Length: 159
Image (cartoon, rainbow, N blue to C red):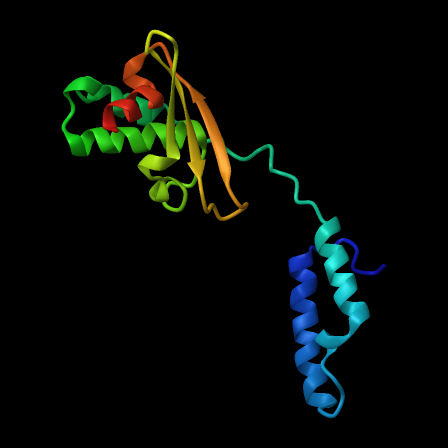
């Protein structure tokens, strides 16, 4: 195959350009996009092409965000708006969810707190009901010993 090294996106651009020219040269013939063999080829190329992550890419350092959070008052003493920011920041960092689409749609019913027999917080389960990539997803987060950077404890205080 001549274009085996090309990505599906590059092949799609070539197909689109070819289809535009073909439509002008042969207006009486059916569009290239309706060709079953081409449809199957592009579908197969899309499923067989894997883009490997770049190992040289920088990893985002969350320490500055943790340092910022630690400059705020203790969780028990925070005003509601600051407590909300802290809960959102810590939950986003620990769950790796999208801040606007997943965390932004999180509701009280989507946060389940897990407690032991003495009523001490053990962790939380977060449910994203309509995330972008799949039907629903769950994140189970345990409680940290340091309550000032614990997303479970912060959400407990917020709710």
